[in-house]
Length: 308
Ligand SMILES: [Zn+2]
Image 1 (cartoon, rainbow, N blue to C red):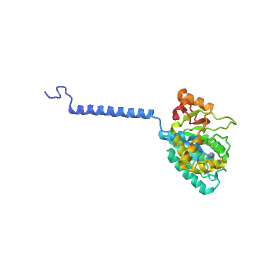
Image 2: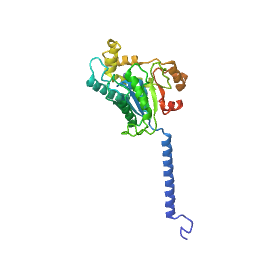
Image 3: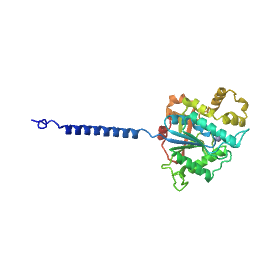
Image 4: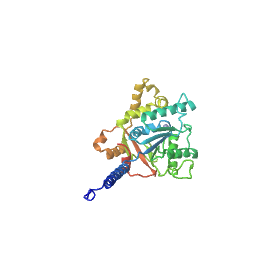
């Protein structure tokens, strides 16, 4: 009696059975990988826009550091080149110095890119040319999140940067506007930086991020802007004589100067987000308000998007 006749499987059928089992395992592994990929949030692309080559750093460097180190792509964009705000230098030489400071700040904050548009400092207006520059920048970055100043501020460059980003908020999805760069597929989430202006309405802190754990990294980024924080701003505030000469001492001075008191509204958001006990121990924060234009996430979604 042959093996075949005894009912034992032929070598060919054994091979087929092994192949089927291997295929089943491969398919299972592929399905598991697809499921894992679907459950792993895609890295976000964030563009923070400011009027001057230090504005994004002041308002967002702590949260930016956290998001960049969580794997998200973070870019800062200055709409002017900073060529006016100084008492001893100006023009191209100052713009060049300010640009180099942005690149050092970006390195220290760990963000992907710091772009500076070549518009004059102190002369920004909400015109079509700059609106198109901003539309292109948001599109090229394929931004999921855009952060900018509110359009009420003491400084016209800040105010018009707010207006320009609002003006771009819908146009980034319109193909026939600035057709040299393809439109963005989904309208991003637009947010405002924190400010203290009360008219026409006070800032509303929809999301507050604790940055005590990255405060030193934020100060390190600010410290890169030597021409701003140790020269121009103290001069215009009549406190130039307070700036220590020693680099470590002046960084410590800057750190103390930049700590902001938390508003009652921000404290309430902080308690909602972190719980009462933890919120009590938090001293340094960055807050953001959801803009009415663009994608409208729920507060729960914002809580998930922003780092703790
Ligand atoms: Zn500024």
